[in-house]
Image (cartoon, rainbow, N blue to C red; front, top):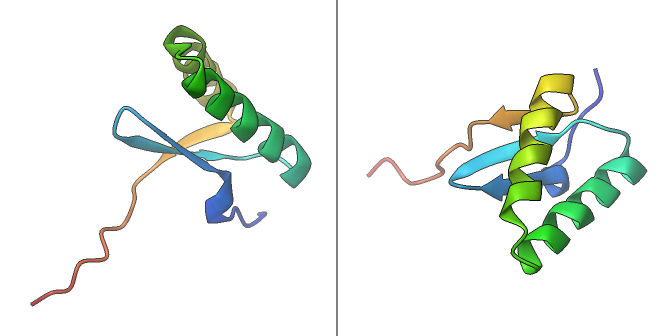
Length: 70
């Protein structure tokens, strides 16, 4: 299984998603998400998240909270 780095993650609506594609394609998808965010194209972002999770190239991940115990 290929290792996914932090740079291929996108956060929307309080959820973080991992882009599970080859690096070049993952960078393009991340650029697409950021462009849609910049232009306030929320419908396209929601559609891509829905389709990405359905087809497996996007996965919701839980972000570890790195707060100190004390």
